Length: 502
Image 1 (cartoon, rainbow, N blue to C red):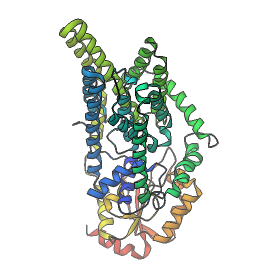
Image 2: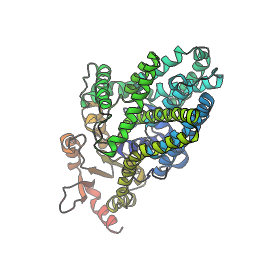
Image 3: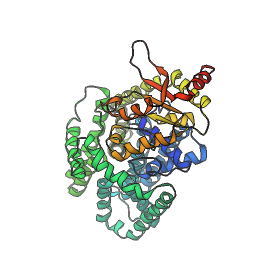
Image 4: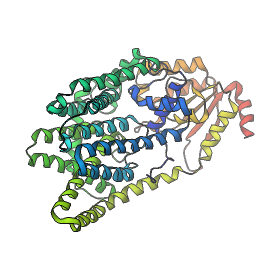
């Protein structure tokens, strides 16, 4: 885990942390602060913010602790379900995922990590998907499995296919059917606790329009999916993209492609093993689960695949399981000599993947240096605006609120093209600016999915020019203008005088 960096900042995680921080201060999700995600995205961050405040290193540290706890839980389950091969499987998963976690940003505080871990533990608990032999299901195990199903149900509407695949596995197994009451109790207990938290921190009346209507009618078209049939369009696109993704399993033009090729092949090999064993339902369920785990594709083909974190976690588990079976076969048939040869081959086989993930982690070093410009901007806002002042940051710079320790003047920690495309959200933003008169407005000219800020931020720029002046701008001689700081015209002189003393 030493290669997992704490230095890089990612907009999605920053937005999650900042929103969770606002909830810890009494803001209500959807009512006070906009999101098109489910509340589960913010529950862990809210708890951490209540205990530790706005400290990003604590949030990231929690995700490392969560990874370690999942590895420990997997070890306990795999040992009980699979004996010695289960132990080897869990140990291999911990070793590989500790090296690979940074590649798909699985250490980030994002809901994909939460439901990916839930699906991983469910597969191990169910046992049948991994070919574990075990006599019975304990009541406590069924209750835990029910709670994990609850996590899947409450994480995202996009989890429905994965929930269905895992639910069918449980329904087909007589050992699990006998424990349906405990399963239901665990599921109900999780949902009860979850909705109890939501009742105090979520505007449940705004949940449906913010999560369902917005994603189906406004957000889907930005992904090229028809708003008339968003669910069918999403599934059809996922099937097409996954078919192309797995067809490229043997395309290795770089260490990164080799790394992903290894994980793709682990899925394909496992499905093939089920077919050869005439376990046709399991083969079909695993193929469907592969699509379900990668239901939401990455917008940028070469971008960070954090939306696919559940797939990478499951593929690593499958690769670990297959290694454990080969290990057991080598020990059983040929003794320690063949076992050592298998271990040596496995190290050689995985070495290029370690190169790819090492380079990915090393590329983050550029974020470790001090950003003097950002530090000066944060320092100026903290020193030259009242502690109770509201500020606004556009379009997507959510961490600034936490670093400056200032609350947003607008009902969102980011402002993206799809929010401008929703008349209600655009009106709320402009009305909030008028009502709250922020003491500072920061604009970072960033293109979102190829859409420059000026193409959708014009109403905000027009509002600013009616009563604000730009007092600071960052621009290298050979670079275009990037960050601008606006303050009310009446206080501009005082702000500049204050900032010049820093």
